[in-house]
Length: 70
Length: 148
Image (cartoon, rainbow over all chains, first blue to last red; front, top):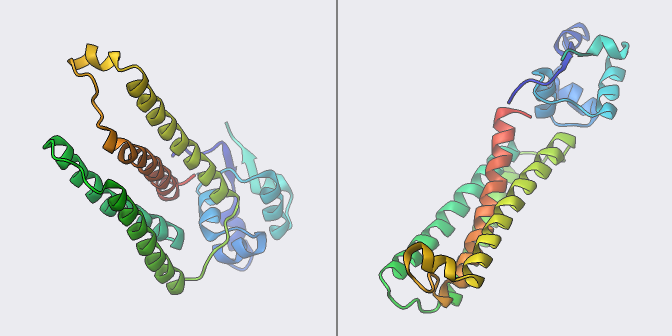
């Protein structure tokens, strides 16, 4: 599957947030761990709602988490 | 491999084994021009076997691991998979309609009048549903394994 045009810094942000696990992040935003893995690997573009939920968890501006790189 | 993938893989194996065996046996009989007796009973038996096996295997899988609710990615993959399954079913149904309503096509193709014995009609319909179901499962497995 080709990577999407939405890149992210989730791995870095998780590391900065006390090495938060993918499972913890998944539970915070209400998705499965597999979905977090797919988003981090840029294989799946999350919905706008999920993207905002993820941003809220890290308490950083949206563009610090997700970037559009066509 | 996640619980969902294991469940899908189990469904695929059961479907291919049970229905595959049934279709191969029926095809052998049809090709040997032998009378296909009790096709209705065989059909019911094979469907019940699949249901029982699915209940047993899926219950075992559910008891071994915690269940996960579907999220937006699961629903998206499911939607794409059902669309692919629908395309397969539609193509099959259209081919079947064509061959039953326009038999002249088959006369042109290989000089036969009716390529499909009436007893095989329910089997062909079941085959179309099974192909559609396998397409749905394979598509879902593909997207889960390769990422989406």
